Length: 250
Image (tube, rainbow, N blue to C red; front, side, top):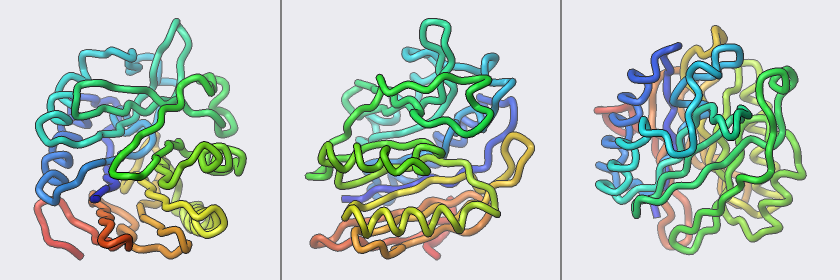
């Protein structure tokens, strides 16, 4: 089983360019046999608050069609983020696009301070992904700060926790420590994807990574730049590597 986190550098107010970058990284990941690829929080638009309504997606948005085609073409589950409007209410969402053409939506459950002025939280969209014996649950950024979120995921049988985040250089080390503790305490593997460049006019801390169930960080990306963090389960043990797009493992 091979999974990956895409560490991206979003372009503000340019959904088309950001989608093109998703396509590029999906193609790159497919060359390494990746079966599931997760992007950072609001990856398609970059992190936004005030501007979010103008770039919001709908659950069946046609702008996702190319991602749907690529999921089928490369037999890959793709998790990509965007603001999502449902019934006139705006959520921070992650689209889960499956190789069979089906898709699901996850919505952020625990909002960061200030986000409640622009977004609603929701517990109604919380899909389960099953892949090669792993039961996978999702989280978006501040979700990971609430232990109840992980406990609910593990309580439902999760063996792998996917976190799409936007953490600053000052906060990413704390996130690493938290995810390591979670992985060890709850015996769950964790894959985390963070931006590798500015978003919302703020710096991001990069360092996307993967932790095994012993809480060990198997692999970690650089603090900045675009990279793929690949984790592969071989004979029950996780191994990792970092790929610079169109480059070699580092």
